[in-house]
Image 1: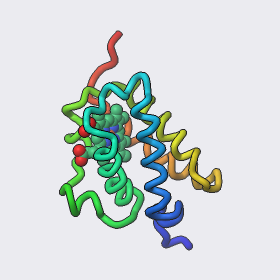
Image 2: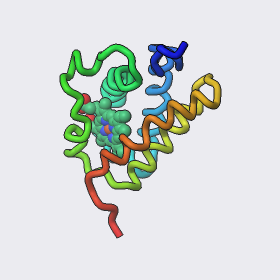
Image 3: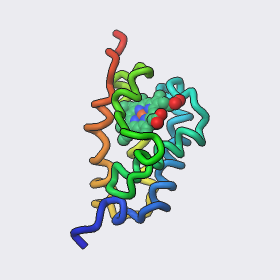
Image 4: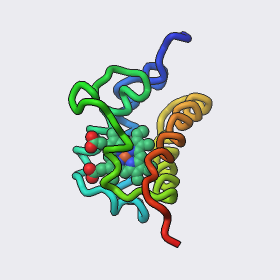
Length: 127
Ligand code: HEM
């Protein structure tokens, strides 16, 4: 149905949980970006679950608990380079790929992320 949100079309709560579970398993093992994550995995996973639920058109769970997302501002304490954004997106592509969805829906879901990920870049890559 056309009025359904992306959140609903991918399978709602269970799909977002599966996505964030897989995603942070990959991130916390990633040779480049694991260094950035200081909070324990369960806490950050839960925050991301709340955020992605609303980011994909579901209930505004993150804002209800944590207030306005202000995602770029919340990322400022963490030095994020373009290479980090690429690595983050690779983990997300793999996590999306692990979901049991039609390829077109996987593409649509993944395509929600690149613009936001590059918007988080706040630090130049070392040369
Ligand atoms: C560009 C690559 C990105 C990197 C390297 C990155 C890294 C981080 C780091 C280091 C944290 C803090 C973790 C901690 O507390 O230890 C964080 C928090 C968070 N990130 Fe990202 N992030 C990126 C992109 C994104 C994107 C694209 C989104 C959303 C689509 C996102 C959503 C979040 C959320 C919801 C939090 C929790 C914020 C809070 O403290 O409430 N991040 N991220």
